[in-house]
Amino acid sequence: MTIAGRDLESFIRRWYELWNAQDKEGWLRHWRAMSPDEPTVEDPVGTLVKRGWDLASQLWDRTGPDHPAVRITQLITGADEAVVVCSNEGTYRGAELVIPSVDVWRVEPGGSSAVRNFWEIPGHIPYGRWMARTGSPR
Image (tube, rainbow, N blue to C red; front, side):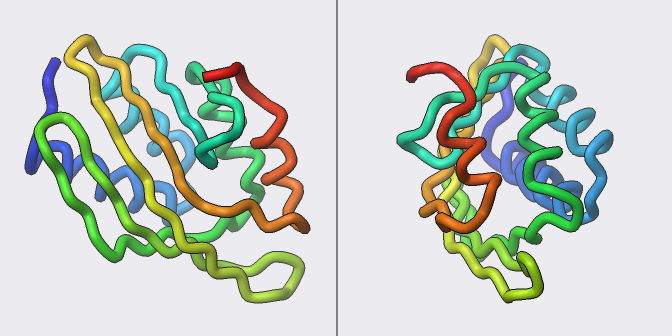
């Protein structure tokens, strides 16, 4: 399976829509339909790499209920890769939270996908501590 250009853009936009809709099962199903093999997530870049569908599911769960919504400000595709400039917006313990990020996607012809998320972990958020210590070296 190969996905590129407008197909990749459509896939990514839908991926974030499902994230924002708090639809975990739909989000996982959508991701698997495009990329059935093992996904990898480096979130944020510099932490351990999360590999496989179990860790993708845990990533969702660890962001907590009502996780921040992602607003795409720019999406650029090229062949089987994409760069997504985002703003992650929500609340945490009653305080407004806005985290800028850049997400880099790569979809392999064999069916795997890799996402590398560039953002700074706010020290007061437990999700950041889990992300830093869960996974395997790059």
